[in-house]
Length: 308
Image 1 (cartoon, rainbow, N blue to C red):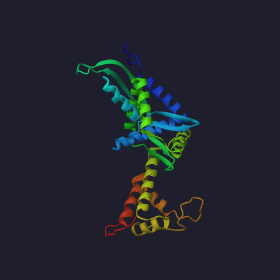
Image 2 (cartoon, rainbow, N blue to C red):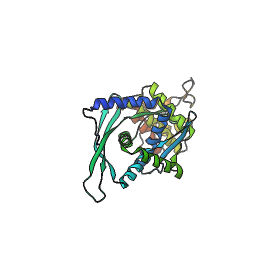
Image 3 (cartoon, rainbow, N blue to C red):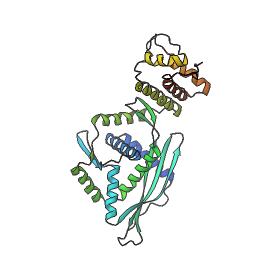
Image 4 (cartoon, one colour):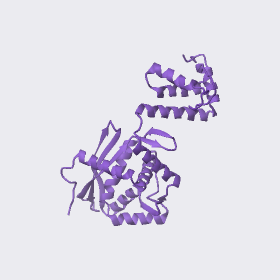
């Protein structure tokens, strides 16, 4: 008997159910870790690094959690195709929630019988896969919020994964899982990776993310310090000295950025604030400008203009 997508399904209903599932994920350590694993695998594939891990396996609360990764679901699709069943996207759409800065994706997937002699494919059944994907996440390693790269692509990949998992034969999924476990095609996240994923999810649930301007500023500041490190500038003193010759950095006090030090030098922060006044409240641009000046200070020229 052919089953199809329930008539009368609306975007609002699908989005409501997706939000509810996202809340359930945030409340489950195992689901948090599973989603984190698949996000990494999807991003790796986008960047051209194809993963061989069809399954995940890790310990959680005294039990072993095992299942198929997004790559494992794709392997199931290939195995089904060998037996004359193809999973094909019927339709897909995405919606942007500007207030929450979240993508919501719907993928309608069909399971088709494809005659091996090349005849016309017959639709057997269909279903919907959805995913709500925030574009702002917190990173424990970075110690700050950041804009998720390729967030829409990640959302589409996970919505497709969810739809295919509904249509694939459970016994086929079990066989692929067993094959992956026996063949070592397994991703086992390190304990610190698991802890970080859970910590980040809790932080995101308890604290609203900052606005895009603040996230961009934090990213630009992190890029500045990373560039300084690559140039061998490891201390505030070295950074200030490098910039002083270019923008006349007015250093006073100790080169210590700790807010609890009353004698700390805040010349760098003041330079960012002054530059931002000329371009509006865009401190990200100010940090980007200072990053460029770090390199320019290596080769001073007559075109170098003191910062005023």
